Image 1 (cartoon, one colour):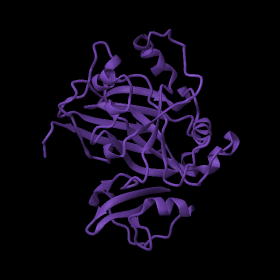
Image 2: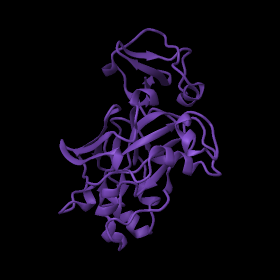
Image 3: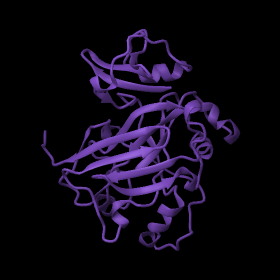
Length: 283
């Protein structure tokens, strides 16, 4: 099942994408977290409309908590960036490295990514996002998938020079519009094994990242279990699981995003998240 949120005349509307089109959840609601918490397949109004006729919002239109993000979780990405950390390729984290994606960066499908004046090194990161469907704390690894509702995609946009100046990741990844999510949430039963999905990013049609989630250092179950240690997860929480190799900063020569670029992040069995980079103040 694909759960989405679109912009209706009276605000966000949660719907299901079926073979017939977009069908509103019944009773009408803009609260995707409540639908996720209820579990199962929601009832719909049975009045499909074409997908092309709606403007998609982030699958959860208004985040209740920041997205939990994971750094250095793909072996080849850790290898390509090892020199910047003065480490030898093949040196990987022993435990997951968590940080938060600031709620103010929230963005959605076709949303504009602003190339803020504070950065000259704007980069893309295609990431698989785990969506929590069941409340839990101290979740055993073997029960972790019981707490997963489904999956979506994030472009974990990053200002590399801001990261470098601040000496950590938060500020450079927290700027307005830097957290596109979408295009929808695909339920776990439909995705199947999320630890073996093709993942790709493209800039203006040129493939930049092309990998598989099987290169993750810590798999989905490990991430859910680890972050839940002393930390209660609730329905609608999201965990961005890291990005593979091929980011613009480490291309030779580096190839960062600029205004006018169209960036697409695609994950097998989920879909394509597409956004355009714009200059500050652009309409």
